Length: 299
Image (cartoon, rainbow, N blue to C red; front, side, top):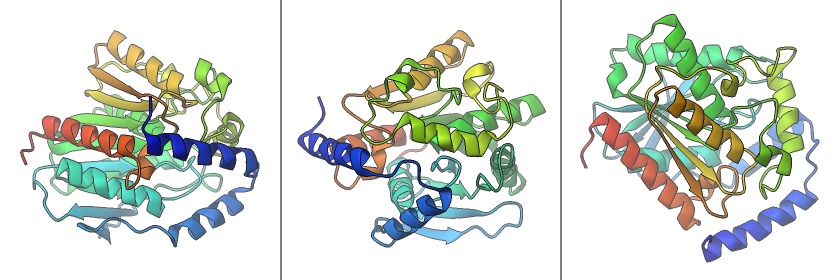
């Protein structure tokens, strides 16, 4: 059962789901997000600044207290079409504080102007940028939300196939791993924060003419052997619940350590509500514990 605030937010999200124009254009979606950004500021205690590199566009998130040996490579959500926005910056700043490490948040190229594989290429470039700067792969954890969870897995698979050293661990928050939309929860479509039809419209922008069952488009159809330990957080009512459970099962079959936490009554990317929602704060704290464990960070 969710908290009182969780129940209240759920009611508000259901009203929004019933009233919003889900078939809006990408331009309208970006404009709506830009308007929301004016109302949201990241929490105090984390400095945010552009990364001074020509390899890839990115931002550094630096909490006031952090371990020098660790860094998160963060891959944002937004359906591959909306850039890193302030709601997600606020969440990532809290993740950095919980994990006591910095984050390198990549600004990958967006669809539909830049469909697959542009975003994936940028995420791989961001990881290699960290290595080139002298960061050890053992001190990196990949973290991705929603579409970013998809790209996190595709990045790991690409690095593995290229023979790059892999990071110490990865975190997938509400990952969409099956862009063909075959999961039972996707078909049920009971997520109060997101409609399956809208998610598929974002998939069309991202995948373009590519087969949605290509492993690097939909990691659900790839093999996960050799990947680092995974932590997966998903809400009980998400359209991507099946994606998350199948990811855990596939990882374990491949011999990969995979931990799945299913949050009762929660919806897609509920961590964005961290200032107000106890379940969001608890999820972020759990991610922080996982990151510190795999980076051997003490606080």
